[in-house]
Image 1: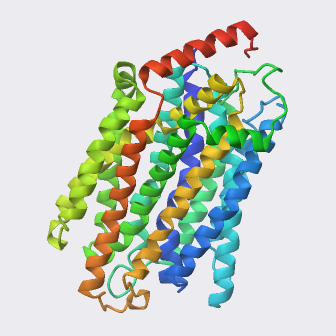
Image 2: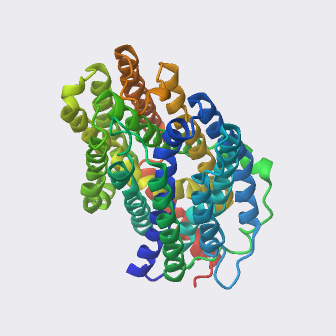
Image 3: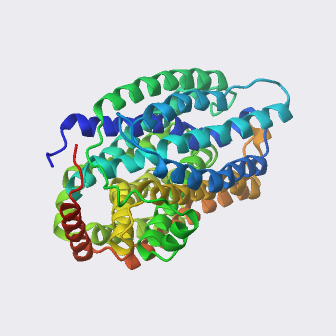
Length: 462
C-alpha cells in the first residue's frame, strides 16, 4: 500500500478542527451561559447535560452498529458521513445558543432539546470519522500521525476558548459578565467555518482499505458487547478515554469560574489555555520517535505520572489569588503529562480495534469505536458535574454583574473542587495505563499477525 499523502492528513485534520470549533464553546461556555445569562440553576444545567449523555448511551451504540452494517457507496463507507453529519452539526450548535424567549421555562426546554439534538448529530459524524482512520491505512506509524493530526485539529478548534474570554467576558459592572449577543455572533461565524471545513475535508480524504467479505459478516449487538466487556484492552483504554475527556472538559468549565471569581482575572484564562496547549504542540515533532523507541503505553505511564504529581501539587498547595502565575506553571506540567495521551488516544483506539480482531478474528470498526465514543460521552457527563459542584459549594449566580463578590468560604471551596477532581481523574488514568495490556512488544506482535492475515486473505486495496 502506498503511503498516505499530505492532503490525506490535512483532510483528516480538518474534520476535528471543525468539530472542536463548536465543541469547545459548548464544553467551556454552555454551563456559564445557562447559569449567568439564562438564569438556569447549576443543578438543572448538570441534569440537562447528564440527560443528554444518558440518551447517548442509547444513541451511540445504535449508530455504531447501523454504520457497521452499512455497505460502501462510491465515496466509501465512512467518508460520506463527514457531510451527512457535519452540515447539520454546524446548524445545531448555533441553535443551542439561540435565546427564543424571556421565559426561564421555555429557555430551559429549548437549551435541553437543542443540546440533546446536537449530541445526536455529533454521533452521526464522530463514529464514522473515528472509523475512517482504520480504513485509510493499516500502518501503525501512519495511524499514529493521523491520531496526532486529529489532536492538532482539535487543538486549533479550541481557538474560540482563547479568543472568547476577551470578546464576550467584558460586559457588566465587574467586567466579568458574559455578553450573550457577542457569543451568538461568534457562533454564527463558527457555523459557517465548520461547513467550509467539512466540505474541504471530504474532498481531501479517502478510503483505501476494503475489508474482505468474510469479515463483513452480520453483527450481533449483544455478542459484540459481551466480547468487548471481556476485552481488557478495550475496557482499560475506553475508561482512560472517558477520564481524559472528563478531565479536559471539567478543567475548561470550572476554570472559567475560578479565574473570574477566585483569581479575579478572567483574561488570564486565555493565558492558561495557551499554556495548556503549548506542551502538546511542543511534543508533536518527538511523539513518533518516542513511540518507536519506548512504545505508546510506556510513554503514557511516564507522562501521566508527571501530570498526577503536578495536579496533586496544584490541589495541596491551595494557591492564593497572588499565586496565579504559579498556578498556570503547574497547569503546564499537568498538560505536559496528558499531552501525549491527547495526541495518541485515537491511534490507541485504532489499536484496541485491531486487538479485538486479533483475539476474536472479527473486524468491527464502527461498533467498537461507537462503544469507545460512548465511554467518552460518559466522560462528558462526569465533566458536566462542574457547574453542579460550583453551585454545591455555594456559588451564587445572582451576584454576577452586581459587583458583589462570592464569600471567601465559597471561593476556597471552589478552588478545592477545581483542583481535587482533576487530580483524581488523572491518577486513575495513570493506574489504568499501567494495567493496559498493549505494551510495545505486544503491539508489534499484534500488527505483524494482522498484516500476515491481510496478505493471506488478499484484502482488496483501493
